[in-house]
Image (cartoon, rainbow, N blue to C red; front, side, top):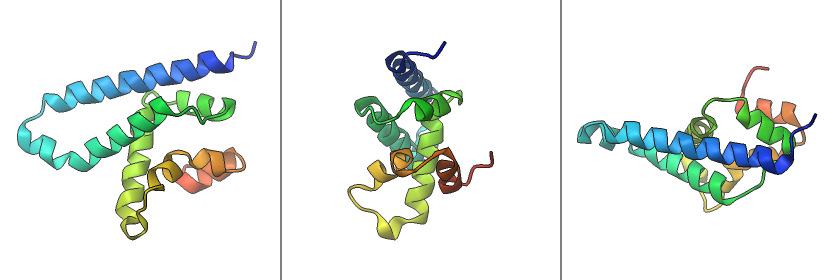
Length: 120
C-alpha cells in the first residue's frame, strides 16, 4: 500500500524538526570557542531548517529519498555549506532556494544524484 503523500511529508517535517532540536541541544553543550568555530555550520543548519519547515516543495519520490536518511537536515545543511564555500563568488539572494530545491529543477533522481555527486 502506498503511503499518503501528506502523512509522508508530515513525517519528513517531524524528522527535520527533531534533527534541528538534536543539533541545537548538542551544539549548546559545546564551549563558546567551539560554537564560534561552528558558525558556518550553524548558519547552514538554520537555513536548511527554516526552508524545509516553511516550504512544501518535495514530491513523493523526493520526500521518500530524504526520509531514507536518519538526518536529512544535516544532509541538506552539508550540501548548502559545501555550495556556499565553493561558490561564494556566485552567492545571491536565491542561492539557498536553488540549492535546497535542487530536486525540483532536476528531471529525475539520477540527475539529483549527479548534481550532488552521490553514488547510487
